[in-house]
Image (cartoon, rainbow, N blue to C red; front, side):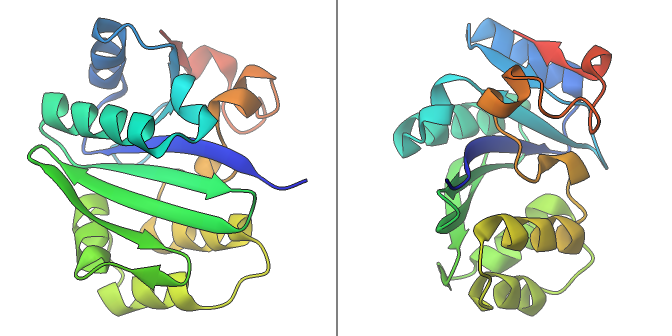
Length: 173
């Protein structure tokens, strides 16, 4: 059985602002504490891996927060995709084995990462047996929240990551 999870990384945002937006949208979600001003948002409906649903939530968050967001999808450990949004809309994507235009630079900028865009490109095209290991590599490279590897709404709801994030630090809408 593979990994199936989605998440939205709100870059430069606060946990309380992400909570307010998700609450105002009446979304069933969990908002993790920030790591380097990057907040992990887990949305129940987006967990079904409907890309349109996930994109809609990621774009709405980016627009309402006036900050970039990244929609992350790991589909059965076969495909890892990072879709980048700004307040004005879709900016690009990076996907295991490929990328779109200047998306690696857009991803670097959104995360305020110190690594180079070519290092990001290489992380997406370099072979990995499982996409969760690629995700772990990208988390280290981009200095993303360490608990975001493998984290989705379903896994969190089942209490599988209490060691990574204490329950009292999570906000639920």
